[in-house]
Length: 131
Image 1 (tube, one colour):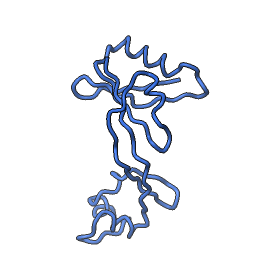
Image 2 (cartoon, rainbow, N blue to C red):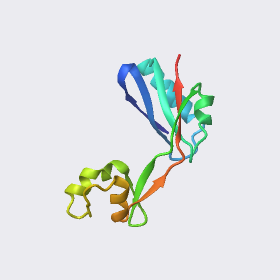
Image 3 (cartoon, rainbow, N blue to C red):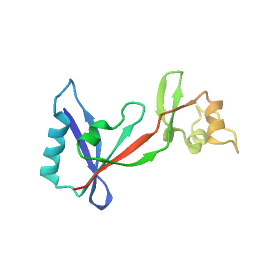
Image 4 (cartoon, rainbow, N blue to C red):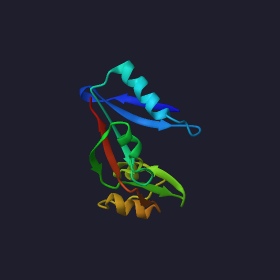
């Protein structure tokens, strides 16, 4: 089991990823406690993707539901490859000779002209731990 954290502004830490190669009983709790002993954080935040998790693991570990993030999208290219929306800002359409561009078109219109389609997620729930 592996947990990765990154420091954010104001002394807040973000639990960025938790992953296992198998079912690891108590793995999350052990990784979290080890991190807390080492860093003594004043706050930890993380996000549960609604399409994958209800956040129960966080709740059982002392996190409280702290907010919601609206559904967001990625682009699907070639019918199967998912790419972050930031890879297709209007400037990229204008500057990349491989992409079609039309002055005055919106990002959505430019994406459709280039056979890129939006794939929306289910949103996220923000969880926070505070001592």
